[in-house]
Amino acid sequence: MTSPDGMARDLVAELAGYGPTLVAFSGGVDSSVVLAAAVRALGAGRVAAVTAVSPSLPAAELAAARAFCAGLGVAHHTPATREGEVPGYRENAGPRRCYFCKSVLLDTARSLAADLGFATVATGTNASDVVAGFRPGIGAAAERGARTPLADVRLHKPEVRALARHWGLTVWDKPAAACLASRVAYGIPVTPHRLARVERAEAAVRAALGPLRDLRVRDLGDAVRVEVDADLVERARAASGVAEALRAAGFGDRPVRVERFRSGSMNTGLPAHGHEGR
Image 1 (tube, helix red, strand yellow):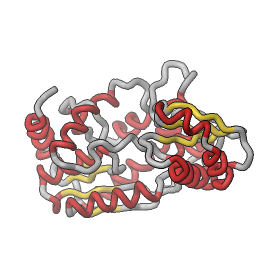
Image 2 (tube, one colour; image 1 turned 180 degrees about the vertical axis):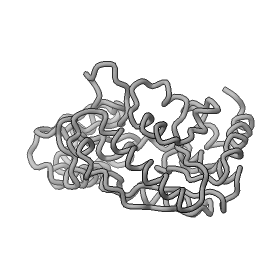
Image 3 (spheres, one colour; image 1 turned 60 degrees about the vertical axis):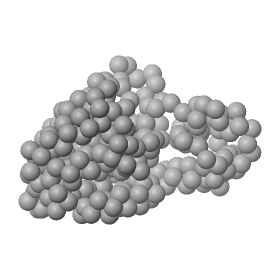
Image 4 (cartoon, one colour; image 1 turned 120 degrees about the vertical axis):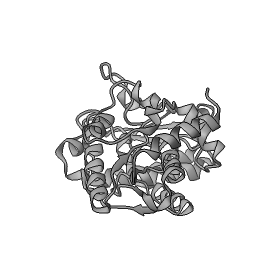
């Protein structure tokens, strides 16, 4: 692994050539590092962040994103996007749902960048993402000319985290937090009601179990799968509060399975597909 100073130098130099830059900002470690590097390269006045606001974004993630941008002194734009009106996203027939979602986000970002007079839209795609296999969201961004500074200077996920820690970013060890739509099984329509129910359920399960790193409540239609850290699986299975939390969130008496967290588990069984949603 290259030293953090070397990684920082390479990334800042890459972004310095972009001109005024709008960062598609999810609040995760990847886009946070891109945003922080852009500020170092260009100055806060020539950088802005855009976070798409829709029912698929948990309220807590939006609040954290706002706070991070404020800490950097960067303008933070939060347009409402309407990917739920796009049939391919709403129908959720397969992993190309992410293509439709990212298309809406990048179209919105490009329009905003033009309004701001910004030359570039950048995303947090890293070098690990590029080699991960089937990633329709990355394809949608590439079609729209988005730049990928982390990937272009060959920073993989562990290196991105190391750089975030080197810069003292609070998100350096933040778990992956894919959008709420990634919790809905393929073939089940994505609706605001389903997304809100998942968000309530995850908050309630966290309250019932206490501190845990990774959590997903997967809406399988006629059942619910709760995924937690491997060392908490048995405790979660034994805790009556988990089923009660799910019932109170709106899942009623659907059967509940508790398993260990697996990134991209909704993609299991899809032929030759990588993990777009987590």
